Image (cartoon, rainbow, N blue to C red; front, side):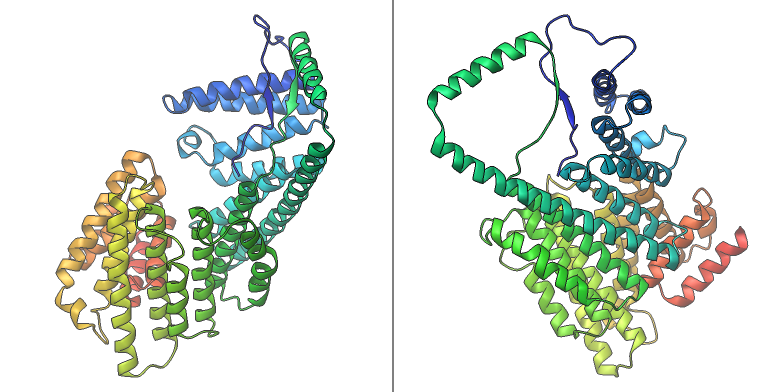
Length: 499
């Protein structure tokens, strides 16, 4: 659901201007919206100037709320703009607070607005969005621990509840609107339309009004909320893997009872929107990964679930996002297969089979990512290059002892060179785009590749990056099987000694 302004101005009479000092909730609202519009005007060209206008908008809404504490419209706009700024790295750069601090402030503001109007679908949806963003930031930050990840999981479950309540409100409005349309069609008098139009014209001339925008609920609106639910369920599955949480039954129950019926009712398989199909496919793969890790399904079933998720029900070859999502699913399968090899006893032949399967899926992932990078709708090239580097580095690691995969060992120099090229390219593009996280991750991984090629100056290359970020990336590389544990221990020890 797009996060739109809750209050919009109707046509003004020519020459009307805002009062210098607002004296009503509507006037505070008008002043805040004008600052917002100025911020939007300068967003692309002058981020610093844009940020100042957005900050003034927040100050106006905050001042208005001190005088009109029960104004939902002021509370909604303040909360919304705080969240929008938190999602814009170019704007955050000009603030004195961190993204986490701003997200925390946005959550407080959203809760306050929600208290004023707990049945408003927009504030329910947006509050859930803030919770998911905060959970993502907490669980992926350099200081993330098991306790912090458990807190993030709690935030995601709360978000899921709010999305569900939002969906219930939307379904009621959707059903009610259709019932009203049917009733109106049966009883309407044509003369009523002319009278209503005349009243509307005279009213618009007499004064200038502000009104809450109550957008009609459509099937697309309902599906947008379902996509948000599916994305949240996917995030929950991924987080439960890292927490080794085995309480899984509620996830499948929630999907079967709350989500799938909505998808089935409001979209058919042949004409289902791509974002709905992708959200469903990503959830299916994440849940399969989780159940495989916990021993509830075997490798063959896991592969079958991925094949079914990205099967013939929708076309993905022309969508960069779909290709990247499938590549991520293939990569996650390879990571989990490596995990199983480390955690369970497998004979030589079983290990060989796992490595053969991993090589195949990594090759398929690279093909998907190569195709995605060529498409005009590719939105995040740094992440695409990062994943291509990850696939090549994982293929290289398969040639390492104790049981080396022959194809990986025979092509080790080429695989490292490919990984270095992709990481360097990702870092260069990320720097040009101002994507700091992707730039730093690419730089750390490129330095690790250089180390594998014999360069001992890894710590010098990473001096400009926060050591906690470096440690986090190295930890993730070890967990994903990109580097073997002995190398990770050496690098972690050197990093700690340099602090």
